[in-house]
Image (cartoon, rainbow, N blue to C red; front, side, top):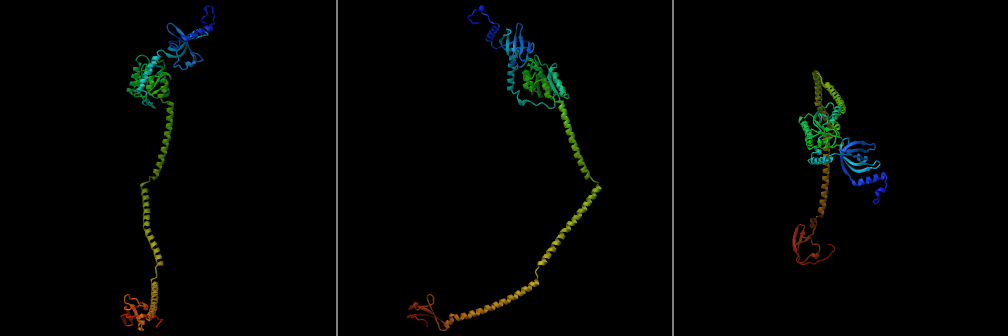
Length: 452
Protein backbone atom coordinates (compact mmCIF):
# COMPACT_ATOMS: atom_id res chain seq x y z
CA UNK A 1 0.00 0.00 0.00
CA UNK A 2 1.21 3.51 -0.76
CA UNK A 3 1.41 6.05 2.03
CA UNK A 4 -1.12 8.35 0.41
CA UNK A 5 -3.86 5.84 -0.24
CA UNK A 6 -6.90 5.29 1.94
CA UNK A 7 -7.04 1.99 3.80
CA UNK A 8 -10.72 1.40 3.08
CA UNK A 9 -10.36 1.68 -0.67
CA UNK A 10 -7.31 -0.62 -1.19
CA UNK A 11 -7.58 -4.40 -1.54
CA UNK A 12 -4.36 -6.45 -1.14
CA UNK A 13 -3.71 -10.20 -1.48
CA UNK A 14 -3.06 -12.18 1.67
CA UNK A 15 0.43 -13.14 0.46
CA UNK A 16 1.35 -9.50 -0.04
CA UNK A 17 0.04 -8.66 3.41
CA UNK A 18 1.98 -11.49 5.03
CA UNK A 19 5.09 -10.47 3.11
CA UNK A 20 4.74 -6.89 4.29
CA UNK A 21 4.20 -8.01 7.88
CA UNK A 22 7.28 -10.29 7.68
CA UNK A 23 9.43 -7.48 6.31
CA UNK A 24 8.26 -5.14 9.05
CA UNK A 25 8.97 -7.76 11.74
CA UNK A 26 12.47 -8.49 10.46
CA UNK A 27 13.24 -4.76 10.46
CA UNK A 28 11.71 -4.14 13.86
CA UNK A 29 13.20 -7.13 15.71
CA UNK A 30 16.90 -7.80 15.04
CA UNK A 31 18.71 -10.91 16.37
CA UNK A 32 17.62 -11.53 19.94
CA UNK A 33 18.10 -14.25 22.57
CA UNK A 34 14.80 -15.83 23.65
CA UNK A 35 14.46 -18.34 26.50
CA UNK A 36 11.79 -20.97 27.05
CA UNK A 37 10.99 -24.66 27.42
CA UNK A 38 11.16 -26.99 24.43
CA UNK A 39 7.99 -28.69 23.24
CA UNK A 40 6.91 -30.56 20.13
CA UNK A 41 10.52 -31.03 18.92
CA UNK A 42 10.75 -32.64 15.47
CA UNK A 43 13.77 -33.40 13.26
CA UNK A 44 12.64 -33.50 9.63
CA UNK A 45 14.15 -35.84 7.03
CA UNK A 46 15.74 -32.78 5.45
CA UNK A 47 17.70 -32.14 8.67
CA UNK A 48 15.66 -29.06 9.71
CA UNK A 49 14.48 -28.74 13.32
CA UNK A 50 10.91 -27.70 14.17
CA UNK A 51 9.84 -27.06 17.76
CA UNK A 52 8.22 -24.56 20.08
CA UNK A 53 9.52 -22.73 23.11
CA UNK A 54 7.10 -21.70 25.79
CA UNK A 55 6.80 -20.33 29.29
CA UNK A 56 3.81 -20.09 31.63
CA UNK A 57 2.04 -17.38 29.63
CA UNK A 58 2.93 -17.91 25.94
CA UNK A 59 4.70 -19.96 23.32
CA UNK A 60 6.41 -19.35 19.94
CA UNK A 61 7.00 -21.68 17.03
CA UNK A 62 10.64 -22.07 15.95
CA UNK A 63 12.52 -23.40 12.93
CA UNK A 64 16.26 -24.12 12.74
CA UNK A 65 17.44 -25.01 9.27
CA UNK A 66 19.94 -27.84 8.64
CA UNK A 67 22.82 -25.47 7.81
CA UNK A 68 22.57 -24.08 11.38
CA UNK A 69 21.41 -27.22 13.17
CA UNK A 70 24.45 -29.28 12.17
CA UNK A 71 26.70 -27.00 14.22
CA UNK A 72 24.62 -27.17 17.40
CA UNK A 73 26.44 -28.63 20.41
CA UNK A 74 23.40 -30.67 21.50
CA UNK A 75 19.98 -31.77 20.33
CA UNK A 76 17.11 -30.27 22.38
CA UNK A 77 14.72 -32.69 24.03
CA UNK A 78 11.17 -32.31 25.20
CA UNK A 79 11.06 -30.23 28.37
CA UNK A 80 14.62 -28.82 28.07
CA UNK A 81 14.99 -25.20 29.01
CA UNK A 82 16.98 -23.50 26.28
CA UNK A 83 17.92 -20.13 24.88
CA UNK A 84 17.75 -19.47 21.14
CA UNK A 85 19.32 -16.68 19.14
CA UNK A 86 16.75 -15.92 16.45
CA UNK A 87 15.11 -13.47 14.10
CA UNK A 88 11.32 -12.89 14.30
CA UNK A 89 9.83 -13.80 10.91
CA UNK A 90 6.50 -14.60 9.28
CA UNK A 91 5.79 -17.97 7.67
CA UNK A 92 3.89 -16.49 4.76
CA UNK A 93 2.01 -19.59 3.44
CA UNK A 94 0.19 -19.97 6.77
CA UNK A 95 0.50 -16.49 8.11
CA UNK A 96 2.12 -17.81 11.31
CA UNK A 97 4.62 -15.90 13.39
CA UNK A 98 7.85 -17.90 14.05
CA UNK A 99 11.45 -17.60 15.19
CA UNK A 100 14.17 -18.35 12.64
CA UNK A 101 16.84 -19.84 15.00
CA UNK A 102 20.53 -19.37 14.26
CA UNK A 103 22.02 -20.71 17.53
CA UNK A 104 20.81 -22.66 20.53
CA UNK A 105 22.18 -23.15 24.01
CA UNK A 106 20.93 -24.44 27.33
CA UNK A 107 19.50 -21.89 29.72
CA UNK A 108 22.26 -20.30 31.77
CA UNK A 109 24.91 -21.76 29.52
CA UNK A 110 26.35 -18.38 28.68
CA UNK A 111 27.07 -17.58 32.32
CA UNK A 112 28.29 -21.08 33.07
CA UNK A 113 30.43 -21.16 29.95
CA UNK A 114 32.11 -17.91 30.97
CA UNK A 115 32.82 -19.40 34.40
CA UNK A 116 34.16 -22.52 32.68
CA UNK A 117 36.55 -20.52 30.48
CA UNK A 118 37.71 -18.39 33.42
CA UNK A 119 38.53 -21.42 35.60
CA UNK A 120 40.17 -23.22 32.69
CA UNK A 121 42.45 -20.25 31.99
CA UNK A 122 43.35 -19.97 35.67
CA UNK A 123 44.29 -23.63 36.09
CA UNK A 124 46.08 -23.71 32.76
CA UNK A 125 48.22 -20.75 33.82
CA UNK A 126 49.19 -22.68 36.96
CA UNK A 127 50.41 -25.56 34.75
CA UNK A 128 47.72 -27.94 35.99
CA UNK A 129 47.05 -29.12 32.42
CA UNK A 130 50.70 -29.29 31.28
CA UNK A 131 51.52 -32.28 29.10
CA UNK A 132 54.67 -33.09 31.07
CA UNK A 133 52.52 -33.74 34.15
CA UNK A 134 50.53 -36.41 32.35
CA UNK A 135 51.35 -40.01 33.23
CA UNK A 136 51.07 -43.08 31.05
CA UNK A 137 48.39 -45.61 31.88
CA UNK A 138 49.57 -49.02 33.17
CA UNK A 139 49.61 -51.67 30.46
CA UNK A 140 48.46 -54.46 32.79
CA UNK A 141 46.67 -52.93 35.80
CA UNK A 142 46.23 -55.17 38.83
CA UNK A 143 43.10 -53.29 39.83
CA UNK A 144 40.79 -50.65 38.32
CA UNK A 145 38.95 -48.03 40.38
CA UNK A 146 35.77 -46.21 39.34
CA UNK A 147 34.57 -42.95 40.90
CA UNK A 148 30.91 -42.43 40.01
CA UNK A 149 27.38 -42.89 41.30
CA UNK A 150 26.09 -46.40 42.01
CA UNK A 151 22.85 -45.49 40.22
CA UNK A 152 24.58 -44.00 37.13
CA UNK A 153 24.00 -45.70 33.78
CA UNK A 154 27.62 -44.96 33.01
CA UNK A 155 28.67 -47.37 35.79
CA UNK A 156 26.79 -50.22 34.13
CA UNK A 157 28.41 -49.41 30.78
CA UNK A 158 31.90 -49.35 32.35
CA UNK A 159 31.36 -52.59 34.30
CA UNK A 160 29.99 -54.33 31.21
CA UNK A 161 32.97 -53.25 29.14
CA UNK A 162 35.47 -54.28 31.82
CA UNK A 163 33.77 -57.67 32.28
CA UNK A 164 33.96 -58.25 28.54
CA UNK A 165 37.52 -57.07 28.00
CA UNK A 166 39.30 -57.91 31.26
CA UNK A 167 37.25 -60.17 33.56
CA UNK A 168 40.44 -61.16 35.39
CA UNK A 169 41.09 -57.60 36.68
CA UNK A 170 39.33 -56.71 39.96
CA UNK A 171 37.19 -53.56 39.93
CA UNK A 172 36.53 -51.34 42.96
CA UNK A 173 33.81 -48.67 42.88
CA UNK A 174 34.28 -45.54 44.97
CA UNK A 175 30.67 -44.26 45.12
CA UNK A 176 29.89 -40.56 44.97
CA UNK A 177 26.94 -38.59 43.61
CA UNK A 178 27.54 -36.99 40.21
CA UNK A 179 24.85 -34.29 40.24
CA UNK A 180 23.63 -31.82 42.83
CA UNK A 181 24.98 -29.41 45.40
CA UNK A 182 28.39 -30.18 46.90
CA UNK A 183 29.02 -33.04 44.48
CA UNK A 184 32.48 -31.86 43.44
CA UNK A 185 33.84 -32.09 46.99
CA UNK A 186 32.45 -35.63 47.35
CA UNK A 187 33.97 -36.72 44.06
CA UNK A 188 37.31 -35.19 45.09
CA UNK A 189 37.09 -37.02 48.45
CA UNK A 190 36.64 -40.34 46.64
CA UNK A 191 39.67 -39.61 44.42
CA UNK A 192 41.72 -38.92 47.56
CA UNK A 193 40.36 -42.07 49.23
CA UNK A 194 41.37 -44.22 46.25
CA UNK A 195 44.89 -42.80 46.43
CA UNK A 196 45.10 -43.37 50.18
CA UNK A 197 43.87 -46.98 50.05
CA UNK A 198 46.19 -48.00 47.18
CA UNK A 199 43.88 -50.80 46.03
CA UNK A 200 44.04 -50.06 42.31
CA UNK A 201 46.59 -49.02 39.68
CA UNK A 202 44.37 -46.68 37.64
CA UNK A 203 41.26 -44.62 38.34
CA UNK A 204 38.23 -43.78 36.17
CA UNK A 205 36.15 -40.67 36.95
CA UNK A 206 32.99 -40.84 34.88
CA UNK A 207 29.29 -40.11 34.42
CA UNK A 208 26.82 -40.10 31.52
CA UNK A 209 25.82 -37.20 29.32
CA UNK A 210 23.62 -34.25 30.26
CA UNK A 211 23.28 -30.54 30.09
CA UNK A 212 26.04 -28.20 31.15
CA UNK A 213 24.26 -27.81 34.47
CA UNK A 214 24.20 -31.60 34.91
CA UNK A 215 27.93 -31.86 34.19
CA UNK A 216 28.90 -28.79 36.20
CA UNK A 217 30.18 -30.82 39.14
CA UNK A 218 33.09 -31.88 36.90
CA UNK A 219 33.92 -28.24 36.17
CA UNK A 220 34.65 -27.34 39.80
CA UNK A 221 38.16 -26.42 40.94
CA UNK A 222 38.21 -28.79 43.93
CA UNK A 223 37.76 -31.87 41.72
CA UNK A 224 40.26 -30.64 39.14
CA UNK A 225 42.95 -30.19 41.79
CA UNK A 226 42.21 -33.58 43.35
CA UNK A 227 42.62 -35.25 39.94
CA UNK A 228 45.83 -33.34 39.17
CA UNK A 229 47.37 -34.22 42.54
CA UNK A 230 46.38 -37.89 42.32
CA UNK A 231 49.26 -40.36 42.53
CA UNK A 232 47.17 -42.79 40.50
CA UNK A 233 46.76 -42.20 36.75
CA UNK A 234 43.26 -40.82 36.17
CA UNK A 235 41.08 -41.29 33.08
CA UNK A 236 38.16 -38.89 32.68
CA UNK A 237 35.06 -40.16 30.88
CA UNK A 238 32.36 -37.54 31.35
CA UNK A 239 29.36 -37.07 29.08
CA UNK A 240 29.36 -37.58 25.34
CA UNK A 241 32.18 -37.13 22.85
CA UNK A 242 31.34 -33.44 22.33
CA UNK A 243 31.28 -32.67 26.06
CA UNK A 244 34.43 -31.15 27.60
CA UNK A 245 34.89 -30.48 31.31
CA UNK A 246 37.69 -29.13 33.51
CA UNK A 247 38.14 -32.69 34.80
CA UNK A 248 38.98 -33.79 31.26
CA UNK A 249 41.87 -31.31 31.07
CA UNK A 250 43.17 -32.16 34.56
CA UNK A 251 43.06 -35.94 33.99
CA UNK A 252 46.02 -37.83 32.56
CA UNK A 253 43.86 -39.14 29.71
CA UNK A 254 40.46 -37.94 28.46
CA UNK A 255 38.05 -40.54 27.07
CA UNK A 256 35.14 -39.50 24.83
CA UNK A 257 32.66 -41.60 26.85
CA UNK A 258 32.63 -43.75 30.00
CA UNK A 259 32.75 -46.85 27.80
CA UNK A 260 35.80 -45.40 26.05
CA UNK A 261 37.44 -44.86 29.45
CA UNK A 262 36.88 -48.51 30.31
CA UNK A 263 38.45 -49.56 27.02
CA UNK A 264 41.48 -47.34 27.63
CA UNK A 265 42.33 -48.78 31.06
CA UNK A 266 41.57 -52.45 30.40
CA UNK A 267 43.77 -54.75 28.35
CA UNK A 268 41.61 -56.82 26.03
CA UNK A 269 41.45 -60.37 27.36
CA UNK A 270 41.43 -61.96 23.90
CA UNK A 271 44.57 -60.07 22.91
CA UNK A 272 46.22 -60.97 26.22
CA UNK A 273 45.41 -64.63 25.74
CA UNK A 274 46.72 -64.46 22.20
CA UNK A 275 49.91 -62.80 23.36
CA UNK A 276 50.19 -65.30 26.22
CA UNK A 277 49.81 -68.17 23.78
CA UNK A 278 52.45 -66.64 21.53
CA UNK A 279 54.83 -66.19 24.44
CA UNK A 280 54.11 -69.72 25.66
CA UNK A 281 54.96 -71.07 22.21
CA UNK A 282 58.12 -68.96 22.09
CA UNK A 283 59.09 -70.10 25.60
CA UNK A 284 58.43 -73.75 24.77
CA UNK A 285 60.46 -73.47 21.58
CA UNK A 286 63.30 -71.77 23.44
CA UNK A 287 63.15 -74.35 26.22
CA UNK A 288 63.26 -77.16 23.65
CA UNK A 289 66.32 -75.65 21.98
CA UNK A 290 68.00 -75.23 25.35
CA UNK A 291 67.29 -78.88 26.23
CA UNK A 292 68.75 -79.98 22.90
CA UNK A 293 71.91 -77.96 23.56
CA UNK A 294 72.14 -79.39 27.08
CA UNK A 295 71.67 -82.95 25.75
CA UNK A 296 74.40 -82.40 23.18
CA UNK A 297 76.68 -81.00 25.85
CA UNK A 298 75.87 -83.97 28.10
CA UNK A 299 76.80 -86.39 25.30
CA UNK A 300 80.08 -84.60 24.78
CA UNK A 301 80.84 -84.74 28.50
CA UNK A 302 79.86 -88.41 28.61
CA UNK A 303 82.37 -89.16 25.86
CA UNK A 304 85.04 -87.42 27.86
CA UNK A 305 84.10 -89.24 31.08
CA UNK A 306 86.18 -92.52 31.43
CA UNK A 307 87.04 -94.89 34.29
CA UNK A 308 90.18 -94.18 36.39
CA UNK A 309 91.83 -97.45 35.19
CA UNK A 310 91.32 -96.57 31.55
CA UNK A 311 92.40 -93.03 32.21
CA UNK A 312 95.62 -94.29 33.90
CA UNK A 313 96.26 -96.67 30.99
CA UNK A 314 95.80 -93.81 28.51
CA UNK A 315 98.11 -91.62 30.53
CA UNK A 316 100.69 -94.44 30.78
CA UNK A 317 100.57 -94.93 27.02
CA UNK A 318 100.85 -91.22 26.54
CA UNK A 319 103.80 -91.13 28.93
CA UNK A 320 105.58 -93.90 26.99
CA UNK A 321 105.00 -92.02 23.77
CA UNK A 322 106.45 -88.92 25.34
CA UNK A 323 109.47 -90.95 26.60
CA UNK A 324 110.11 -92.31 23.10
CA UNK A 325 109.76 -88.86 21.63
CA UNK A 326 112.13 -87.49 24.28
CA UNK A 327 114.76 -90.16 23.60
CA UNK A 328 114.38 -89.69 19.89
CA UNK A 329 114.58 -85.94 20.23
CA UNK A 330 117.77 -86.30 22.38
CA UNK A 331 119.56 -88.64 19.92
CA UNK A 332 118.55 -86.73 16.84
CA UNK A 333 120.81 -83.69 17.48
CA UNK A 334 123.79 -86.03 17.98
CA UNK A 335 123.07 -87.84 14.73
CA UNK A 336 122.60 -84.58 12.93
CA UNK A 337 125.84 -83.21 14.39
CA UNK A 338 127.78 -86.34 13.37
CA UNK A 339 126.35 -86.19 9.88
CA UNK A 340 127.26 -82.53 9.54
CA UNK A 341 130.78 -83.27 10.93
CA UNK A 342 131.29 -86.12 8.46
CA UNK A 343 130.15 -83.90 5.62
CA UNK A 344 132.50 -81.13 6.68
CA UNK A 345 135.34 -83.61 7.14
CA UNK A 346 134.77 -84.96 3.64
CA UNK A 347 134.75 -81.47 2.24
CA UNK A 348 137.87 -80.62 4.22
CA UNK A 349 139.63 -83.76 2.99
CA UNK A 350 138.67 -82.82 -0.52
CA UNK A 351 140.04 -79.33 -0.24
CA UNK A 352 142.98 -80.02 2.18
CA UNK A 353 146.36 -79.08 0.52
CA UNK A 354 149.19 -81.73 -0.07
CA UNK A 355 152.02 -80.39 2.10
CA UNK A 356 154.77 -82.64 0.68
CA UNK A 357 153.94 -81.74 -2.90
CA UNK A 358 153.65 -78.11 -1.97
CA UNK A 359 157.01 -78.31 -0.15
CA UNK A 360 158.57 -79.92 -3.19
CA UNK A 361 157.08 -77.25 -5.37
CA UNK A 362 158.36 -74.56 -3.02
CA UNK A 363 161.84 -76.12 -3.04
CA UNK A 364 161.82 -76.25 -6.83
CA UNK A 365 160.70 -72.63 -6.97
CA UNK A 366 163.40 -71.69 -4.44
CA UNK A 367 166.07 -73.41 -6.53
CA UNK A 368 164.80 -71.71 -9.63
CA UNK A 369 164.77 -68.39 -7.76
CA UNK A 370 168.33 -68.91 -6.57
CA UNK A 371 169.51 -69.72 -10.11
CA UNK A 372 167.66 -66.75 -11.51
CA UNK A 373 169.08 -64.45 -8.85
CA UNK A 374 172.62 -65.76 -9.51
CA UNK A 375 172.29 -65.29 -13.22
CA UNK A 376 170.79 -61.87 -12.75
CA UNK A 377 173.64 -60.95 -10.38
CA UNK A 378 176.22 -62.15 -12.83
CA UNK A 379 174.63 -60.15 -15.62
CA UNK A 380 174.48 -57.04 -13.45
CA UNK A 381 178.09 -57.47 -12.36
CA UNK A 382 179.20 -57.82 -15.97
CA UNK A 383 177.21 -54.78 -16.94
CA UNK A 384 178.62 -52.75 -14.06
CA UNK A 385 182.15 -53.82 -15.03
CA UNK A 386 181.54 -52.76 -18.62
CA UNK A 387 180.09 -49.44 -17.56
CA UNK A 388 182.94 -48.90 -15.08
CA UNK A 389 185.46 -49.52 -17.84
CA UNK A 390 183.64 -47.13 -20.12
CA UNK A 391 183.42 -44.60 -17.33
CA UNK A 392 187.03 -44.96 -16.57
CA UNK A 393 187.89 -44.31 -20.19
CA UNK A 394 185.73 -41.18 -20.16
CA UNK A 395 186.83 -40.00 -16.70
CA UNK A 396 188.24 -36.35 -16.51
CA UNK A 397 191.07 -37.76 -14.42
CA UNK A 398 192.25 -39.85 -17.33
CA UNK A 399 192.13 -36.78 -19.52
CA UNK A 400 194.21 -34.86 -17.00
CA UNK A 401 196.66 -37.72 -16.88
CA UNK A 402 197.18 -37.38 -20.57
CA UNK A 403 198.52 -33.85 -20.03
CA UNK A 404 195.45 -31.73 -20.07
CA UNK A 405 194.44 -29.10 -17.48
CA UNK A 406 191.11 -27.60 -16.49
CA UNK A 407 190.70 -23.88 -15.78
CA UNK A 408 188.04 -22.80 -13.32
CA UNK A 409 187.04 -19.30 -12.41
CA UNK A 410 188.09 -18.88 -8.80
CA UNK A 411 185.11 -16.68 -8.03
CA UNK A 412 182.21 -18.79 -9.26
CA UNK A 413 183.88 -22.15 -9.85
CA UNK A 414 182.74 -22.33 -13.45
CA UNK A 415 184.94 -23.74 -16.22
CA UNK A 416 186.57 -21.22 -18.49
CA UNK A 417 185.77 -22.13 -22.03
CA UNK A 418 186.52 -18.98 -24.05
CA UNK A 419 189.68 -16.83 -24.07
CA UNK A 420 187.47 -13.79 -24.18
CA UNK A 421 186.38 -14.42 -20.66
CA UNK A 422 189.98 -14.13 -19.41
CA UNK A 423 190.93 -10.74 -18.00
CA UNK A 424 194.30 -9.56 -16.72
CA UNK A 425 194.56 -9.79 -13.00
CA UNK A 426 191.81 -12.40 -12.75
CA UNK A 427 192.43 -15.38 -10.48
CA UNK A 428 191.94 -18.88 -11.93
CA UNK A 429 192.17 -22.37 -10.51
CA UNK A 430 194.07 -24.86 -12.60
CA UNK A 431 193.30 -28.57 -12.12
CA UNK A 432 196.06 -30.97 -13.22
CA UNK A 433 196.42 -34.75 -13.02
CA UNK A 434 198.23 -34.67 -9.72
CA UNK A 435 196.58 -31.62 -8.13
CA UNK A 436 195.46 -27.98 -8.64
CA UNK A 437 196.96 -24.50 -8.35
CA UNK A 438 195.62 -20.91 -8.21
CA UNK A 439 197.13 -18.52 -10.70
CA UNK A 440 196.70 -14.83 -11.54
CA UNK A 441 196.76 -13.61 -15.08
CA UNK A 442 199.23 -10.87 -15.89
CA UNK A 443 198.31 -10.53 -19.52
CA UNK A 444 195.90 -12.12 -21.88
CA UNK A 445 196.38 -12.55 -25.60
CA UNK A 446 193.29 -14.23 -27.10
CA UNK A 447 193.92 -16.41 -30.13
CA UNK A 448 191.25 -18.24 -31.99
CA UNK A 449 192.28 -21.59 -33.50
CA UNK A 450 190.44 -24.58 -34.82
CA UNK A 451 192.27 -27.07 -32.57
CA UNK A 452 195.65 -28.05 -31.14
